[in-house]
Length: 103
Image (cartoon, rainbow, N blue to C red; front, side, top):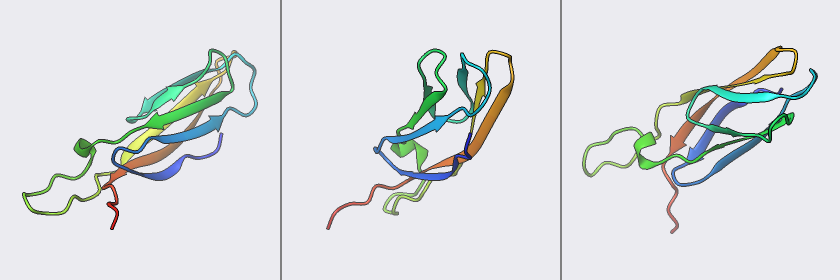
């Protein structure tokens, strides 16, 4: 499975990332071990879709009148286990950033 790496997502935007188990023997079981994302996978599938939609609460706190600042990067670790019980994982970070307003 490829590394997830650092991901920055605008508040209110849905982040999606497709990942795939490589090797092993199905059926597979996916789980998010650490982090705010959800793992969506058909039962036993080697494919998994990660999703996260950050909210204003995921941004850094600010004082009245100050511009919103990016939130702290949250660790994300996803694991997949195959039929033999072998486990593989991938890690990265998710960070909420303020939405960019049009002109």
